[in-house]
Amino acid sequence: MKYNGVIQRKFTLLDKHLLELQKHLKDVNFSVFKNDWALRCMAERSLQVMVEIVIDIAERIIAIENAGPAATSTEALEKLEKLGVIKSAQSYGNMIKFRNLIVHQYEEIDPEIVFNIAKNQLDSFRMFRDEIDKV
Image (cartoon, rainbow, N blue to C red; front, side, top):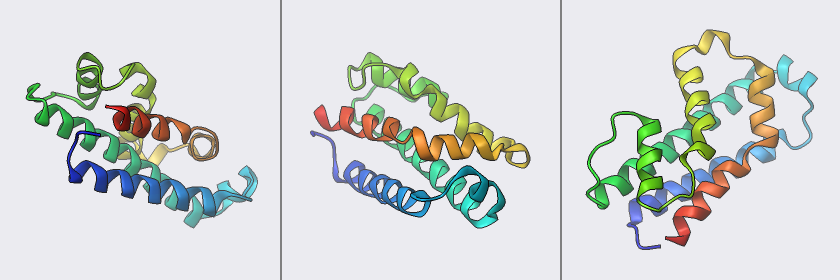
């Protein structure tokens, strides 16, 4: 990877959140999850932080590449695609939507959505990291 240590530190934090989230939810089924306030809050926060890391990395790479600022998080991912850093911004679009839901509609978060992402969709974060590492 040609990018700087700040990006590497962010990937280290991303990996930490991925591992901890998987560890804490390993043997947890949905029934337990939806009734455990602490587990739900932990999962929501970890997922939010992981999406923020993706956004931060995208914005840092755009700055390093002198590609101009992005007006939105979605635009930041689109710029990474145009720069050839990632294959498809659309692959990560649901991350941004989920982050917006957590941040702006926090009183309505469906535990089933959080559980599904935390148990079945963490590979998207690994895919993002791996795409950046290939650059």
